[in-house]
Length: 383
Image (tube, rainbow, N blue to C red; front, side, top):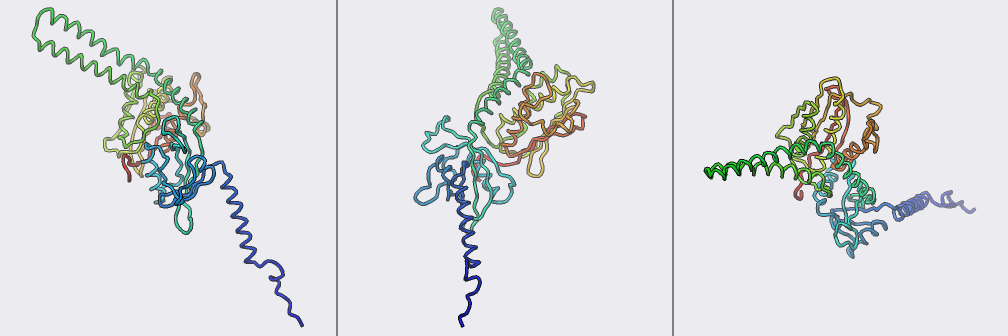
C-alpha cells in the first residue's frame, strides 16, 4: 500500500512560502526606492555605499569601489554643521535630525548659481549587519529662493521701522563733525596751539567712526547672503538688535530690561540671521505695547541649560490668545493692518534651521513671551 505524501509536500512548504513572501517584499521595497522622487542614500563609516537613481541624477553613480565620501558635494561652509549632526546622530543624541544643506550637483563648476538646497533627513538603520545611516534628500531650491526674497523684503520692512532711529544715530555725530570743523577753522585763523587742533581732529575721527559703525551694522543686516554658521557669542547679535532698536524704543517711551549673562556658552549659529530674529521679536513687542494702557515694558532675558541657550522676549502688551498661538508662525498670518505676517514665520524657520525651537507663551509682564532655544554646538573646526 502506497504511503500518502505529507500535506506540506502537496503544495509549497512553509519555508518556501516565507522565502517567496520575503522576495516579493524586497521587490516592492526596491521598486519604491528605485522610483522615488526623493534622493535616498545609505551611509556607513562616513562613506556613501548606496544611491538610488534620483540621488545618482544629482551626484552621479558611485565610484568603482562602490562608495563615495559623505562630504564630496557639500558646500564647504556647511561641512562643520553636517559633521556635528552626523556625530550626534551616531551617538543617539538627535531625535529628528533634519537640516537644509547646500550641495553642488554633478558637473558643477562650484559657483553660487550651481548650488542646490536639499532638505536632508537621516535615521539610524542596520545595513549588512552593521550600523548605518539612511539619508533622504528633497530638492527645495525653488522654495529657498522664494524664501530668500521674502527674507530680504522682511529685512527691508524691519529697517524701515527703525529708519528714524538710524537717521538719528547718524545725524548726531554728523552735526558734531560740522561743529568741530567750525572750531578747527577758528583755531587755524587765530593761530592757536596745534594741540587744540589735534584734540578737535580726534573728536571728528570718533564721530566718523560712530557713523561708520552705524552704516556697517545696517549694511551687514540688509546684505543678501547665504547662512554662515560659526561659533559665536550669542550676546552680540542680541545687543546689535537692541542697538538698532534703541532710538525707536526710547521715543516710544518703552522701558527695556535686559539680562544677558556674560558666561553663556558659545553656539554654532549665523549671527546675522539671529540678529534678524531678535529684531523681529523686538519690533513685534514694540507694536504690541505701543497702545497698551499699562506700563510699556519689554524684557529680554537669556540663560543656558540642558544643552541649549534660551532667549526670552516678553512684553506688557495684550498678549496672544491661546486659540491663536498655534497659528502665530503660519505664513502671512497677522492680526495687524499693514503687517506682512511673514516676520514670525521666517524667524521660526531660521531657528528651526539652527536645530532649535521658537515658541510663544504668556509673559510674566502680562503680554506675550517668545522663547528662542538654540542648541549649544561648537563649530569652527572638525570634531
